[in-house]
Length: 101
Image (cartoon, rainbow, N blue to C red):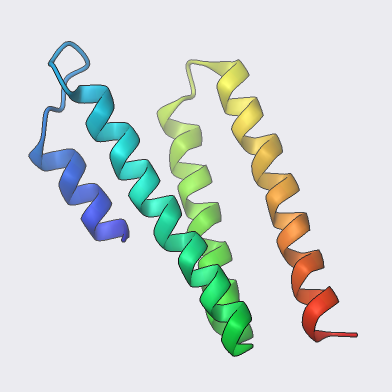
């Protein structure tokens, strides 16, 4: 998913002024996040903590990349980090609730 997302962003319009630029960026991010979400749910279904943690790390990697990408816009950057932290805590609680009674 990471490779497909990066290739999509590189192959299509790369400058903010070009038509379709934002569609490509949003699509690539949705593909990446959708793949990570599918991997998370698959890991929960098969009870594989290493796969689950790999998906969580992929999500955190996306968050870090978005941080550097959006560094000039502090409000959006702060919002993404806050939501990522909440998501990480909720994912951990979900795993503990389901499998580590």
